[in-house]
Length: 232
Image 1 (tube, rainbow, N blue to C red):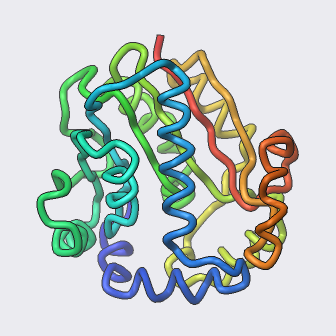
Image 2: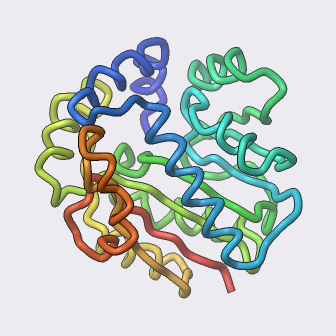
């Protein structure tokens, strides 16, 4: 993971992101909120309650923080990132709302079985694919038995998504990951209980049709997707 690259864009991230996704008819808040909501719904589908320890892996400038606070107010939230500048900005935006921890890009600085939920929002396409297995093994290590990890990514089969990534300054070194490849890497890292769903089929102008999305999650045309896994 390239610390310098993320530091370089930290100050401009929110503005650049907003401009880059204009065609979707939505702002960054929409994308941050739906990802957290999906993750919390998956966690609750396991019958889970309480005050989970949550890791936001590659948290950036903290866009997920208000939504974790909205959906699980009493959670113990840790934001982990290679970019110290992004972490500083996140803490300025949301003081006392999370722990902000720097990461060397290889070894997650927490003990085994520490987190109940691990969340990652469009981070892995910034990481060289050869490093994915090691990082997923690290996520497996710090996840509690029965815990949940959810990784969201851009869908390289969606042409509008590919165009948005190719024209985004902070995605200049990105390499998109097909869902089937990420599922395979999850399995190689020791996860066995997996599911993959495609998300965001309709732009803001057609948001009334989003009620159909639960029936389309198998269709590999959504703008994004997630892979979720449980640790046995």
